[in-house]
Image (cartoon, rainbow, N blue to C red; front, top):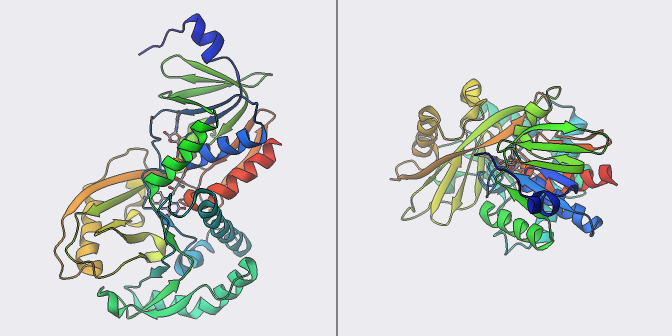
Length: 374
Ligand SMILES: Cc1cc2nc3c(=O)[nH]c(=O)nc-3n(C[C@H](O)[C@H](O)[C@H](O)COP(=O)(O)OP(=O)(O)OC[C@H]3O[C@@H](n4cnc5c(N)ncnc54)[C@H](O)[C@@H]3O)c2cc1C
């Protein structure tokens, strides 16, 4: 539906902004809040196509994690060791900052620790082999004691190798509450929410940018910050940004949960946790890579089937469960694991391609954006 502007809309409500942030996910909102704190009298717009954000931020699994040992080892194939460990540090610091800023109670954060389980003996042996090496790298970077340790997985009742690897610094949170708390702060700070605008194209001029929405509305700004993650690809054709759909399902409440906390397997591609008396599980993307390289929300039967089988065979063997919901979120990946945070020109800064780590990275990367804007 075309929106024909009135004089009041053009001259007041949509008068040019000092800053416009495109994308009101976790990154966009944290960036807008930081801009407002540094430039209290600036006029700031937060632009999104959806009233509650529609990407990954409200659709993930609620993990506050900085990575299992096999995931870190796998990342060494994609990025340099230095970059991988530096990125792990950003996730570690980011989680601490999330909790310190918003409050553990407000976002239902629990530092429960995370277990990586193994269904393949060879993968377990490889991780054990590298354990002290990775611990040494992480301890030197984070200034903490050994991160990973061997534990018995037997008491959890899962069908997996008897040893698992524990990381005490991992935690879980409630993604709904996290998004709500950050939205409340953004709105109370006077940031103008322009929700319901699906931006189709960006036009630069010597004064800044014009964002053109599908309904014909235009948003003018002096500084534009692109924070729409996977969906930035059409606006940045020279960047390596690929969509990656992550599918998740949650069971109905179980009578008795055999375990509590958060778990990973298969290099972090599969992950599951408890949510009250339910089990939430995500993953399977690595088995259907081409199919999952998509912007289409919703889910597929083959991934759903994989996740339900994984629950039945590995996570909850011998226990009855029923699936309550199945959904997906769209992440952004590239050949490199590092997110893209940089100034493109005098009027444009980008903070995109979170590589499935944006919950943990948000506080640190939003600060990096501020350094580029200052
Ligand atoms: C299943 C799953 C599991 C995950 N697990 C973890 C994890 O364990 N740890 C972790 O740290 N992270 C995890 N993530 C990733 C994390 O959720 C994302 O990295 C993070 O939410 C990205 O936030 P964002 O604000 O950059 O992007 P998004 O949340 O994708 O927000 C982008 C926003 O831009 C808007 N938008 C896009 N295009 C347009 C347009 N043209 N016009 C207007 N608006 C537009 C969208 O509506 C959306 O609201 C997971 C994600 C998924 C899906």
